[in-house]
Length: 285
Image 1 (cartoon, rainbow, N blue to C red):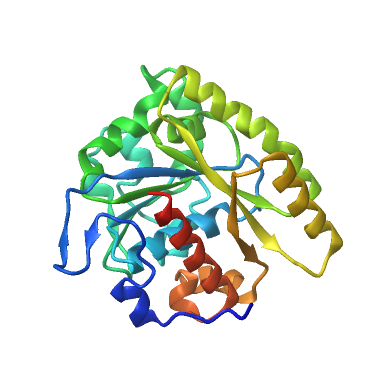
Image 2 (tube, rainbow, N blue to C red):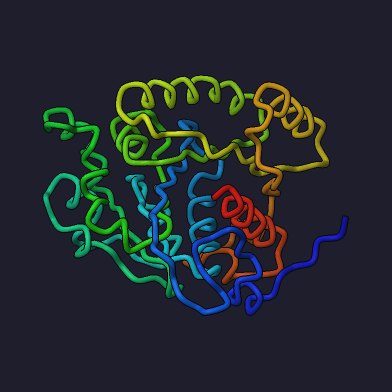
């Protein structure tokens, strides 16, 4: 099947928009209900930040007010949206541990409908500092409550671990999206991650559910990638997104320009794939 790259105008007009609370005929918002989506995988280098940034950008281009929360001390989502980490104050660290108001920390981005709650290196110490804090698993949930109703989606980019920061994201989220690189070691950790999600659902957040697993860095030319794809579909039927994110040079380049891939090269295969993934998530509403 031949893919036809969308135009930016079509995306902004809402061609991508499926089953949402926006009424395109009268151009008014119905009562917004923020959906908090945590992008989680304890393994690094699987495309978490790339997925979080570009999915958030996809929602924004579809005129869905979106907040991207950078909960990774590396702050890659922050720089990936063109914000310099040095000298930032306040950040998500000061919000969840310093009692700064969330509204004060939220920053504008190049997309009107996309806001960012940035991170910086201070967040490295949060895992230790949270241990002695009361209700430590719910600090992010409490921080998001005052601003959540201003957005249709809140996307949380999690660190590559299952520590207290990720637990905070899972305790705050409605749903979990799992990026999975098409390699053996990534598949090994998936079962452990799903067990952790089950424990969080039982003990901290009964409403938590799995939005789906998205295959990333897919190279259809390799037999291993095809084998991993088939294995995932066999063991987790019905939980895999139809959209597969390919290996793509433009996806790798975009963060160095401080842009989502849609603003870097709209017609690249990576951009098209993330727009398709955005449509799939919207259809799950």
